Length: 445
Image (cartoon, rainbow, N blue to C red; front, side, top):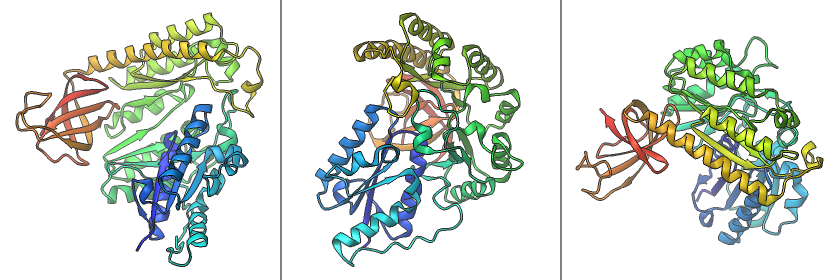
């Protein structure tokens, strides 16, 4: 009987891509992926460590994994072990600690530990590795694949632990990435999201390529229906890059981290732009890519951020009108410059500021979706649940039996009720109105 593995992923899309590669490696060794920790011989928690909250969630997940399955091999993997391996080794719930640098060997290490504890009945580790194995991306959903194009960061922002847990910037060769995308297309996947720590610097360490050339090659050399870029920095956005978005296969969604709307705070954070640069980038996107979804990250309560700096950040975020804001109260990370700065902001005040910034984000979220009402946009349909006949929220489709959920090209969650099988299909859909965090839509067939 094949062994089983459960993989729980925390944090960013880069971690999602790593988890997909791990799933492939276990599958090649004869292991079956399961959703329940209770059913798994091996449980991998692929952690994030960007904040203290992320660390806490990782520890909670590891303890929950052990409670669910006392006999399983529980693996603490990813960024948290890379930063503080000894801390995790002290946890009695953890069997193995594997940092990012050891992730390509994780499946083999876990299977070997399972064999040591449970004997020769365990399937052996038989992964056949080729050049680049474990480096390019993989599949997390049936409809969407995450492909890691680079890893590491050389920017060393004052608050960020990522350079220490992901290392120096390094790009994955274009040929490997094209081959990976083709594999996903052949397997029936309709969308690929390119992930990395600093996507805009892709190719700096390779000859004759950069992000624009990579995007062009993927579009020209594959039949991929939909290509998404997960994140770009404001100073990396140019008219030349945006020209590529005339190809409708490139999704009109741009995640552009702001972190603060105050120039003084941005300088203290050691970010590579100011608010004027950020505003120009947003204006460029909106002129060149109509109705693009622009989302961002904002940190509140950075050391030295006083009331006026916070007010400036709030005002700037409101001025931009983001389609969504991911708000993070500043979290001290040992090993970063900001950890040692004076004028740390009180936790209660950080939470208050986070609530204010979240309100700005919610306003932008609602305003953007209200503007989209009445438009017809392509939607990649992902999941469905049964509904009661005659209980259609849409009311215009009394024969509906399923409530489908999917994402538009500009990254808006939509739901539609229909009797059609939409699994892993891209169809046009007319957006009607907001329904909580999603928009109701009618499928155009």
